[in-house]
Amino acid sequence: MDQDRRAQWLRGVLDLCVLGLLARGDSYGYELAQSLQSAGLGVIQGGTLYPVLLRLQRSGLVTVYWREGGGGPARKYYQVSPAGRTVLAEASGQWSAFAGGVGAILQERTAP
Amino acid sequence: MRYEIWLAALTDELRRHGVGPDLAGHVVAEAAAHLRDSGEPPLRAFGPPSAYAAAVADSIGGPAQRARGVVGPVRLRAVDITKGYGRRTVLSGVSLTVHAGQVAAIVGANGSGKSTFLRICAGLTGADGGQVELHGTVGYCPQAGGTADFLRADEHFALVGAGRGMPRGAAVRAGGRQASALDWTPGGEQARQLSGGTRQKLNLVLAGLGDPDILLLDEPYQGFDRGTYLDFWHEVWQWRDRGRAVVVVTHLLNQLDRVDVVLDLSAGGAGVAA
Image (cartoon, rainbow over all chains, first blue to last red; front, side, top):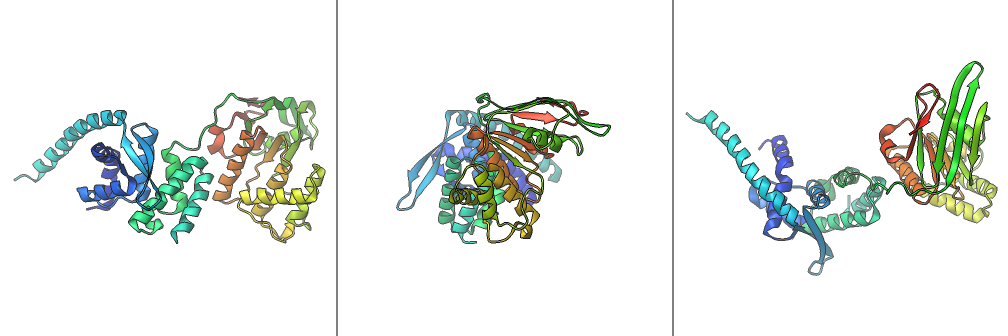
């Protein structure tokens, strides 16, 4: 995929994808990066991911806590807040409408 | 780059970008955990420390803003200062009041009298009219000059320290500490052998020696690289948080939303502090 285009798409939805993953369960940065990759969004570097997490934390959509890792040092865990769930619910409806519109246009263009 | 080195550089850069020590500690610990888990080289995962620190500072909304309105007594009061050279009026009725725990910026075009006003406040230049009151000890940093060519940095610290009642050893140690905050380790060179930027670091350290109540700084960052420029502003905010009154002549506007008082001398010499 065109890397510039992918980066632009990600910029618009990465925070929502992170919220969506956290709605399934608390997680930490590296695990989130792996989940995003296995969901097909490609490799998300730490330099991209953690600032998004900080923004979500600052705007109160996620809360954080530290938990000792098995044998390793503590990890910072993220948990979606009630406000985060509200935003996620609204945005997923809006995203469906938006993505549906884009899909309709692109498919019409390639239809016979 | 080994990742311990990268993490140490990140710690420095976060401080330079005004990220508080608690949050910086968390950011570094989280990055360390990520690097260990992923086994990736830090430059690929996070990019250069300065860029990542800038992204972190940006995502938390920039440097922490201090609660305003908690100010101490008046340290500097300049009232209705006028000054001319020959027939040319440089300052006409300029006033400025700075309290303990405040930073004032003096801005204005070249030739608008910024340095002259600061020198009048410092008592180095006489005014034609008006009055300056200083309540406390003063440190002054000129734009250039001010150092003795054939003295080493530690000799400067001892000399200026003596003038402020500090024993030699204490002055040299304090100078060294302040120098390292500006990313400079003084060696055995004489001042004339230092680069312009490093001489300004020396000037700035001398201004702050003995922790004066009032700091008057005349564009002290000429010749500083970007990192040291940020270190300089970090020092300014530290002085403010410790209750010092700081006046900075500057033509760089990107810090103005963080200072407490702006005196703009562009408007024809009759400055108004807002």
